[in-house]
Amino acid sequence: MAIERVAIVGLGLLGGSVGLAIAECLPGVATTGYDADPDVRRRAAERGLAGTVCATPAEAVRDADLALFCVPVGAMEPAARACAEALPPTAIVSDVGSSKASVGEALARALPGRRVIPAHPVAGTERSGPDAGFASLFRQRWCILTPPADADPAAVDALGQFWEALGARVEIMEAAHHDLVLAVTSHIPHLIAYTIVGTASDLEEVTRSEVIKYSAGGFRDFTRIAASDPTMWRDVFLSNRDAVLEMLGRFTEDLTALQRAIRRGDGEALFDLFARTREIRRSIVEQGQDDARPDFGRADHASPARPGSAR
Ligand SMILES: NC(=O)c1ccc[n+]([C@@H]2O[C@H](COP(=O)([O-])OP(=O)(O)OC[C@H]3O[C@@H](n4cnc5c(N)ncnc54)[C@H](O)[C@@H]3O)[C@@H](O)[C@H]2O)c1
Ligand SMILES: O=C(O)C(=O)C[C@]1(C(=O)O)C=C[C@@H](O)C=C1
Image (cartoon, rainbow, N blue to C red; front, side, top):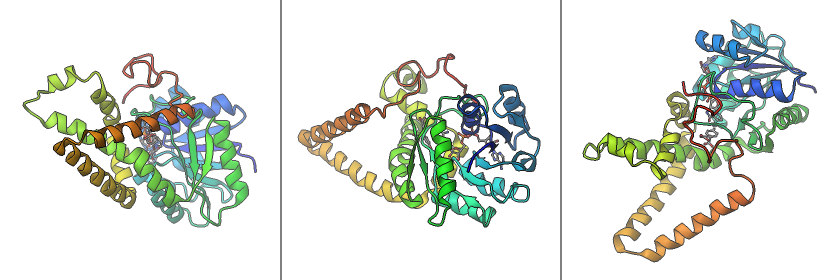
């Protein structure tokens, strides 16, 4: 089945990047877009994030082969409900949400009997809003599809091919497994960044200016992650609660073991762990999984030359 008309609901970082990537990689595919925020719709039209930016969700999805929900995970259900009547019954329904089990359930509740195939492009930045999107966001990044067991294989293939055309590498996984894996690789790292930056800013005697002045290294990297959108991340932690709590329990045990090693002066335990983690970083780089975005990991992220800007 061919995907020729894509409706993008939510025109922030992810929705805008999908629209720009389609224009660049699939010029024959028509895009419509809708966002609940009128200012976002105006800016999306100015930037050409979708071929047609619509005033209502119904207008956006009316002729869609693929309706792609690019809203915070807590807004998936209301956003999908608003499209229910107008959406053609044969359209593929998908999303880009960072957690998958609860989003799959939300979309199925809002659009019963539809071809729901949840997906997660594991690609993003700390920025958000209609100015943040860029066409190359998905290039060489994974996109994980979590089709339900009874999904139509032709629809799964079509969605996989769509993401490959935007430059992504596609993997299929069960939603619960996705949520556990992403809890470790994405959600808990964000929680740690929010915590360390919050802790530093709470230390009154280490003044804020000193925190900023000496944050050239590790702390600076944490502040980038901790600048990520509060609405998006609140929703991720609430929607992936069980997996995050399970992994957080493991993490806390490991942190306690490290605390004990430091207290006991057990240099060997510290060295062994740090040597092991260095190898993990090396294998990520060797497998070409390091960040492929042009100015990530090299130039200053705050550089105005970077695509998109903070909202
Ligand atoms: N930011 C990342 O790094 C990243 C990466 C991968 C996946 N995601 C996922 O992508 C989704 C979107 O994130 P983003 O970073 O693009 O956020 P964003 O804040 O840049 O964009 C979200 C947009 O959705 C709109 N919106 C909210 N509720 C809506 C509704 N009911 N109907 C229509 N529009 C609505 C908002 O006005 C906003 O413009 C989230 O589910 C997030 O988990 C984010
Ligand atoms: O690179 C970043 O800034 C990101 O946070 C991107 C990141 C991640 O944790 O890898 C964030 C959330 C997603 O759902 C996918 C990607």
